[in-house]
Length: 166
Image: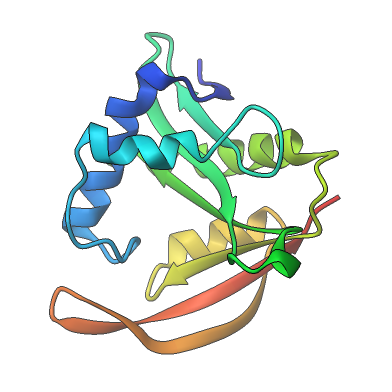
C-alpha cells in the first residue's frame, strides 16, 4: 500500500537519489550536475510542514520513497508570494502507477488554507506523460518558452501550466 506523508529528514538520501536520476538521464530538470545529500539539504530546508512551500513523499509498505511532490518559491519578487512552482519526481521504477496524481492531490490538500492563489509547473518537451499528469490534476497550458534550456547538447522547449489554488 502506498502512503503519502510529509517528508522527513531521513528521506533526504532517497529524495536526492531520485532527483539525481533525472539530472543524469533527462531534461525533466535543467540541473546538469548531481547533488550530494549535503548540497541538497538547503532545498529540503526550504520546505516546511506549514505554509506555502511543502514537500510530500509517497512511500511503500517498507517506507521506501517512491516519489515526491513539492511546492516552492515561484519568483523572488514580493508580489509573487501567493504563487508557487510545483514539481513531481518519481523513482524510475515507480512511474506509470498513478503516483504523480496521488502526490499532487496530497500536495494540494496540504496547501489548502495557505495564502496562495496559483500554482505553476514547467514541463520540458516532449513529455506526454507529464503533460497528461498536469492536465489530470487541474492545470491548463498557458504557454511555451522555445529553446529556453540547454542540456545534453541541445535546446529544450518548456511548456508552462497554471492551476488555481483554493
